Image (cartoon, rainbow, N blue to C red; front, side, top):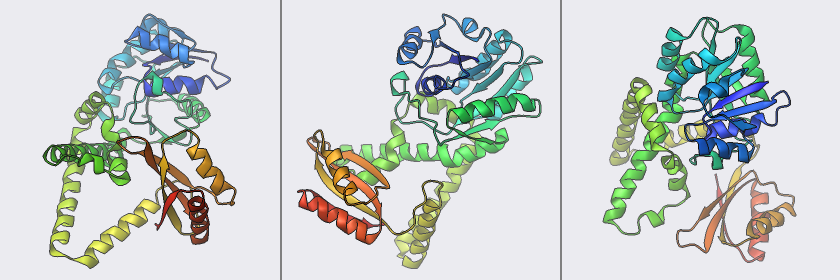
Length: 363
């Protein structure tokens, strides 16, 4: 199999790295608007060679992945379709689909196959240096085939994505955009708003941002993403995003009224329903009460190994962990999730014996 990779940033580079581990893939030809980026993709092992032009990259390709900003995808699909061999499957990784799929299919040459795609994976980092071969392992990869897509072409792409470790789901393009507005686009815009609010307050109150704890950092993480990508997303999915923002704003104002009126029972109901919904998110299932251990740690080599080895020697399993570094440097906080009151108590006691400051909180 010969694969053309158009765009070698975080997603494109990660696709290339993952494809290199698929036996059937013999060649990955990379093309990027920045030649040095495509060359770096080759150096990192995300491609077998770099092409000087898009036409050169797609010549003879069986599959073409387009991993570029949304606004550029339609033009690149049509260019690829004009040069790729008969039967080639062209797909993209854009996070909006409705207008894009309609626009492409209006001009797509007869006999060419385009299947819209959207891997539900990524980080706040970007660029080829952040690419990771395991980025898609266990993640959903949405495909938006239309009636003109032949079953054999869809099955071929579905199989290949499965070999990257992804779980594939097919959705109607419009339905995809409605769902993304809720679970992807709104969270980013919310994080952006919260971060800007905190930044403005930080100018009024020196040191405010230095007080930001794990919760604030968790919910604003995505605000560090590439802004140009999000400008395109907002333009492409404006209607669905605007609708969900209005719904969210109404709910937030309602919550504010409950807070101001001191309606504890109603507030508690909102908190409980949110907690249950959060716990129902797909992921690792655990049985028993979860406890979070907050551990103050020095920022030096070997600390993480020391903590995890101490807990592992007790036979206590760590369900999840996160490290937060203090702004002034030299120290940080490690947050560990374990199941069971006894396990949490034994782990905390062992770490205290080792000289660590530990707090245990029931979730």
